[in-house]
Image (cartoon, rainbow, N blue to C red; front, top):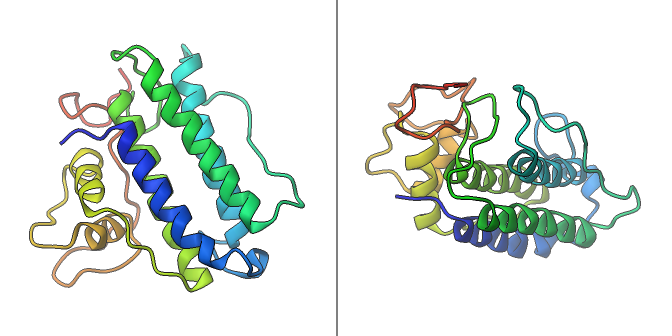
Length: 202
């Protein structure tokens, strides 16, 4: 079940489409991820996606992120923040489509391949999108086939048989509890290819 740039496109289209319902609200007053409000969460999401594109292009020879940060104009409206995350996703998607298929680049969860970066981008979009949606009282309904592929690639260790893929992804990223399944506090995805040693930096 390969995760592709098309999955990232589908994820951002779904999330942005739902969050657009709340574009008239005050995002600085709505909760987002952790201590961030919804506006800052959108800014963080955009930065994450562009930073992944940067890693794939620069491919630092030492284990580190590329030394830049993408920030939004402080006067950006919610609609403009949705534009920012859409552009950021497009930059990552375009990079995934144009770099050589055998490219690997640093991530703390292992030297990721293109599928790993596509999966990380999808998780960022879906999970931070959910954090914003909760604070803004919006319900997300992402494509379940995308969620299934992301789960299989990024969280191969989890048992989600018989569980709705979106629900399972929220549990895998510690956004909700599932009866009979352990806490996912401290969760980590797998950036490295599945046939690599776990969390390999090699």
